[in-house]
Length: 197
Image (cartoon, rainbow, N blue to C red; front, side):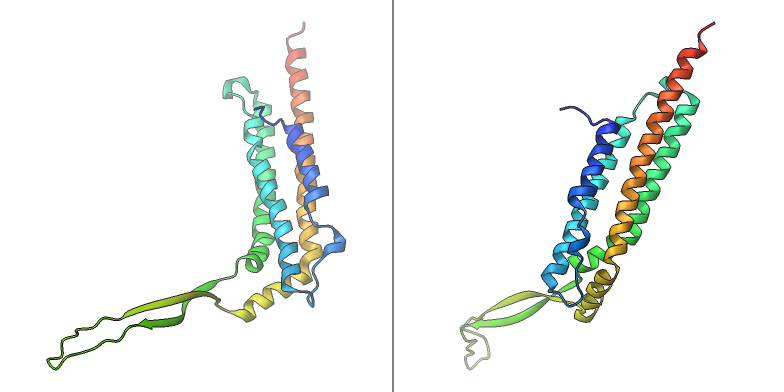
């Protein structure tokens, strides 16, 4: 096992942008099948999940004990963290709910059918001498079919922009990592030159 470096993380984000985010020729169509809409949403959701997991690796790639980090390095790291968090929050707020509404709509568990086995016989005193068994068959039914259709329509209508939001944030994250690495390199050079007389 080898922990990922920031350069590795940035490279993997580039791979997500190219290979995982659905291309423009696969945008779902409002008149298309429910399965094609769900497939597009699932592909974008998968890309977001991988991106979020990669961003969890940033803290391990940038870890240094507090006294081993200069003041400016701590500030640079704080800026990087804030920018990454801002990107994640915006994608979680604007993209993820639209995908989740299509991929995991609200369902209720309802009794679809009840099967009675045996008869309940009673004798003259009114006490039951027979027995019966009820078997309930349950199914999961959509709570609001019209809401699901509306969510699919909204996803189809906004698909190009949702893709753009994800790709824009991926690009921003790559730029932030590159800027952080450049600032870290500059800070390291100043530390070395600061001791020369």
